[in-house]
Length: 163
Image 1 (cartoon, rainbow, N blue to C red):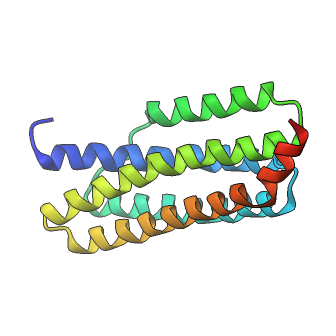
Image 2: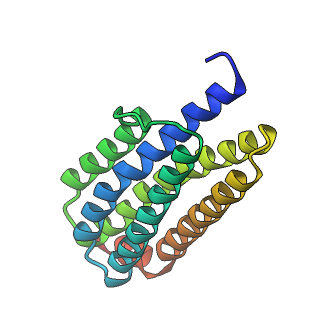
């Protein structure tokens, strides 16, 4: 990578991979959640993630970037950690609150990636792409806030009572 344009392309490739990997991961997380509201939140975010992946695909196409087949290593690791947690947890309430923590780790990674991509797009003069990326960034903030609200509410109280 020699230019900001090269770095921007790398960021976009990573974000496309992240969204692709999350389609599978969120489906699994929804199945693992025992709480109805949490399951619904994962299912809603899964649908949103499919739209986000489509947006990223459109951005890549507009910039004549072919999506790479390589998976995001950071996202692979976050998903692996979530799977390890799920395999070790024994109580439904603890699984639910742990799934929220794992989901928020993913959201924070996405927030960081999209925030960076928005800045690069603006610097490179891609105003419309920056707006599209900002819309996704806003959705990621909302998803993180929604998970936080679930964690601060009754799910945490349920998990505390189980420990």
